[in-house]
Image (cartoon, rainbow, N blue to C red):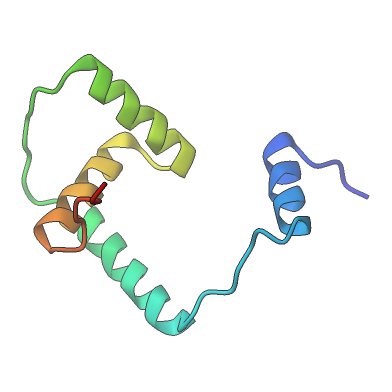
Amino acid sequence: MTKLDPQERELSESYDRGEWKPVARLARARKRYQEYAKATFKKDRRVNIRISSRDLEAIQTRALEEGIPYQTLISSLLHKYVSGRLTERKA
């Protein structure tokens, strides 16, 4: 048996605990995420913004958790917001 690295072990244990659920309407979900990816990677303009160090560090941490560059995460969030797919959660 091949030795698993920590991330692989975590995924395997998560699967064994039954935490993985099938995706409803897989083809539709796959298409939606492909559209997100296309929109995210189509970069034809540059924007410079100033944000707090604390917010940037939080964004970078979340991007690491997702396994994507933090600029890609920011771009994706902005795209979702302007397209109406990112909404505020009500308390």
